[in-house]
Structure formats: structure tokens, C-alpha cells
Figure (cartoon, chains in turn red, blue):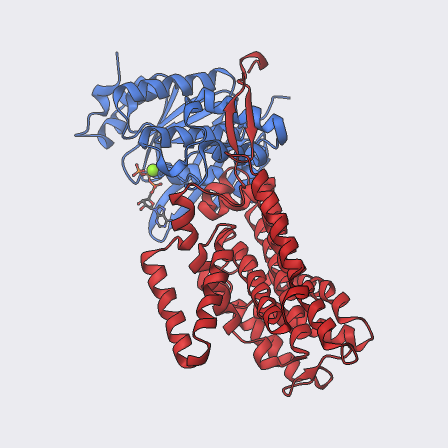
Length: 334
Length: 248
Ligand SMILES: Nc1ncnc2c1ncn2[C@@H]1O[C@H](COP(=O)(O)OP(=O)(O)OP(=O)(O)O)[C@@H](O)[C@H]1O
Ligand SMILES: [Mg+2]
């Protein structure tokens, strides 16, 4: 192969310039950050729940949409994150500062677990993740120091002015959601991200060209655990208490799956749209009790049947739009 | 001391229940060799590739590269050591562009990054005639281009040995001719080629050795025309047109 025959190309990371997306993103972030100065806590509370759901949706999408790991047990790490904050705050640490440590604890716990569950495939993997979450719940029930079955109250925020506490909770949730989304996007733009995208499309093809599948899955599993841990840490900080039955509830997995499926699995944009859709549904049906679950379930089934690529599949393909360009665009060099 | 052959199979066997797809196969392949493999449907040709690439683990026997056993290595490691394959049923990354499909192989198989990686990917697309479709989604390609993408992705890993599984199947005569040119070019720059193909005519443009498989056994190995003319091979292909398509 002589070098002189090598064609030279210019490669950019998106078809169109993405500078406007960057500007819009920064403006949006600034607007969101100033929200506590503009609205009351009942509104910021809604946003906190939105950011928690977004964090869960984005990381579950990485797990299931890219690495092909359909987990129904991420609540294991939501719980680990929440209880880590409980313990650290009990030791006198500020609960806000404990949030990143909650994420870190979940990531660390997920490493040994990954050596068990990642050797299982498909439905066996899914069931195993759920069993892990249940074991964690049972372990907490047998730990009186963690409140056992009755739950535990978060210390460290009792003396803080509620308005200040709620504002900081909001900023913490915004920071976690933004970091998760940006982190996920940056990750997908790396060489490793291209590996993940290849695994998403065809695992056998990916390993045949040198992609180390198991290693990639382990990294994603740990990253997703960190995301779930951060979400759990936010949950305890916003609710000021934690109960094993609800924090380890499988309903969290149902939410994540819904958000990713509705929005469009295997895309960066999908879970954002999915979280919005889920949130609108939840808010508009809040007073209708059981109807809410029925409608959410029906929407999920209909979407899966008729719009398998999700809302972003409809919008993004129609307008050839990428809010978060992760690909490579080739132009012949002149 | 003589140099170890590029690839060696030593008594490799593989069964699926009662079906024997590789029956104590032994063969040896030198650097820059070009070998064709023929055999009836279900003979075990694709399985043989999978045993070499690591997609299948043998029940018995040893696979060696440069004299070192690779039997226990996974497909990704074998690819990084220089064995790349194509799949009979294409396994392209449907939602990624043609360029990105090849780039994955360049990153991991060839171990390049950045501009160097872009350069090799572009070069491979040029060599396989896919340069114009670089930004096209793989899922939108037609059959010919899809087959070429399989080849391009394998070449992106910068292999020393490439295993081609029916890359000419379903193509028109001029398309087959174009493909033969490409494979001949790959071979000419020192890459060993093993090519499974029912279109024997295509093989004659590239290979100097032909192996015939039937029911997991090698029933012919040698100069292509001699192999096709042998009684054992003629028996297996009785009633098919293999004999006639061999030119000359
Ligand atoms: N994973 C598997 N499990 C069970 N049987 C298999 C498996 N893979 C292949 N076989 C069987 O092994 C036999 C050999 O298959 P193989 O694909 O190697 O044949 P082939 O020579 O490539 O055939 P073709 O010309 O049709 O591509 C076939 O009978 C096939 O059905
Ligand atoms: Mg085959």
C-alpha cells in the first residue's frame, strides 16, 4: 500500500454546523438554572422529578438501547445511591455533597455484580437484575440501622430554610441531569461510543471487527449504575426520607423502559422526548388514579406496535435532524 | 528453523447434536496464500470460517496462528491478531454510515485512531469502490454494495488473513467481475485470502488452491482444476454444473 494512493478526506462530526445547538443548549441551561428565582417550589419540585426521570431514562437507554442489556433491576442502584446518602449524612456530611458519592457507591457496588449478571443473556439477564434488586431490598429490611422496613429520615437538612433547601435540591437535580446527558453524549462521540453504536446495530458484526463486547457492556453497566445511584441520591434529598419498599420498587424500571421506548431507544434525543411525554401524561392524569396506569400502559403498547422507533424516530428521520450529532461526516478533500 | 505457517487447523472437530460440521479437519495455510472452498449446502463451509474466526469453539482440535494456539481466544482478539471475516448473511451496522461501519473495524481491528484511522477507512472504501456511498446509511445499500461493505469492513481491520463467505452470491456477472478484481488486488498486497463461493468461476480469478468440503470432511485439496476433476468431488456435485463452470 503506497501512501501516495491514499485518498485524503476531511471528516467532521456532523453534517451541519452544530454551533447553534450549542448556543441553544447553553441558553436553556442558564434559563433552567435561574428558575428558582422566578417560580415557587411547587414548580421546581416538578422539575426535580423530571430531572430524576431524565437521568434514569438516559442511562437505561445507554444500557438497553446501545449495549443490548435490558435490565429491569436498576432500582438496585437507585436504592444504593439513596442509602449511601442516608449513611453519609448520618455521619455528618452535607447531603448535597453526598450525592456524587451516592453515584460513586452505586458504581462500585455494580462492578462485582456485573461479573455475575453479564454472563447471562436476554431474559435471564433481565431476571437476574431484578433478583439483585430484590436481594438488596431484603438486605436493607434486615438492617435496623438503615431503618429496616419502616424507612429512615434523612438528617442534615432539618435546620435549613425550606426555600433554600428546595432551590439547592433543584440545582442538584439539574446538575445531575445535565451531567448525565452531556456525559452520555460525550461518551457516544468517542471511539468507545462508536463501538457501542455498532454493538447496538449488530453485536456479532461488532465483535468480528475487534470490538471487545464484554468489556464494553461492563463499562456501560457501571456507568448506568452510577446514573441510577445519582437519581436515588436525588430522591432521598428531595423527599427527606427513604423506604426500602418504594426505593427498590420495580416500578422505576417500568418508568425507565417507558421513557426510552416512547422517546426512541438507541438515540441520545429519545429519552428526552420520552421523559417529556411521560411527564405530560403523568401530570394530566394525576387525579385519575388507576386510569393513569392504564393509559400509560396502553400508550406504551401502541407505540411499540406502531412507532417502534419512538417519537424521535418520527421527528428525527422526517427532518434529518440530530440534536446531538455523534456520527462522522465525510467530505472529499480538495 | 522453518517459519510456522500463517494458519493451521489441527484435527478440528465440531458437532451440532448429530450433525458433524467439521470432522477432524487439518489444514495449513501460508502467508499470502489464496484458497477457494467449495462444497454443497450444509457441507460446513461457514462453520469452518466460524471455527477460524472464533465465532464457534471446536469440540476437539487446535487452531493456530503463526504457530500459536488461538483456540481459546474470542473473535475480537483473533481479529486484532489479523483474522477478519465476512458473513454470508451481512452483519452490517444498519443505522450507521458506510464510513462508520468501516471505521469501527479500523479503530479496533487495526488499532488506529484519529486522522490515521480516517485515512485507512477512506482508503478501504476507495479500494472496494464504496467511496461514493461513504455517508450513506448501511441499511439503505443494495445487495452488491452490502456485500462490498462486508468486505470493506473486514479489510478495515487490516487483516493478514481474510475469510470471504459467499461475497459474490446473488451478484450479476459484471458485478462478480468487479469483485474478483478487488479481491485479486487485496491478495496482491500480501493478504492471505480464503474464499467460500458457489460461483466457482469467481474463484478461478484469484485462487491457486481449491478445497472441497462435504459433510465436514475435506474430500479434495489442491490445484483447482484437478480438484474439480477428481472422482470424489464429481460424485458430490453430481447433477450440478460445477464441472462446467470451471473455465478451460
Ligand atoms: N448454530 C448451529 N446450530 C445447529 N446447527 C447448525 C448451526 N450452524 C450450522 N448448523 C448446521 O450445520 C450444517 C453446516 O452448516 P454451514 O452453515 O457450515 O454450511 P455451509 O457449507 O456454509 O452451507 P451453505 O452453502 O448453505 O452456506 C448445516 O446442516 C447447518 O444446518
Ligand atoms: Mg455457508
